[in-house]
Length: 184
Image (cartoon, rainbow, N blue to C red; front, side, top):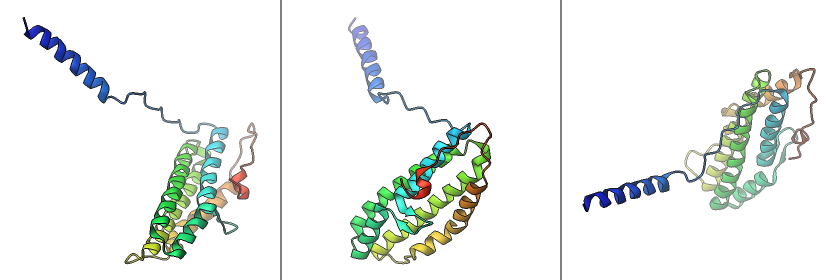
């Protein structure tokens, strides 16, 4: 007779442990890729905004607050501060890459989303090179060289050319992306 209550208690404990090991909350549904121009435009603008927040305006050569902080840390030789700021910049660049991936669902804009993704990756390489410089790491690479070796120059040209020639559907109402003027 004692085995039956112990078995029931064991089953309850297993159920409780199983429930406790679960996520505890429903997992977030992934955001679907852009299917329309409006969805593309929103996600693409968010990706470009991440670029401006992370590194500044590449066309104008104006740094963001974050990239200026990173440059200051590198100049001061403060590797810990450089790593901290670089981590924030990289998270922002990765956020932009996620937005670019979403925008890439709208097929006519695919080439621009691939280009901005490559630009963001190239800036990640530049940021990593800056941190290596702050650490005086062996084999450190000039940040601009790292950007160029990662294909940043070609990707930027493809991005600018692609955005300039993107056909907007006749039924669309394009909205200006503030980031295009260098404002996040």
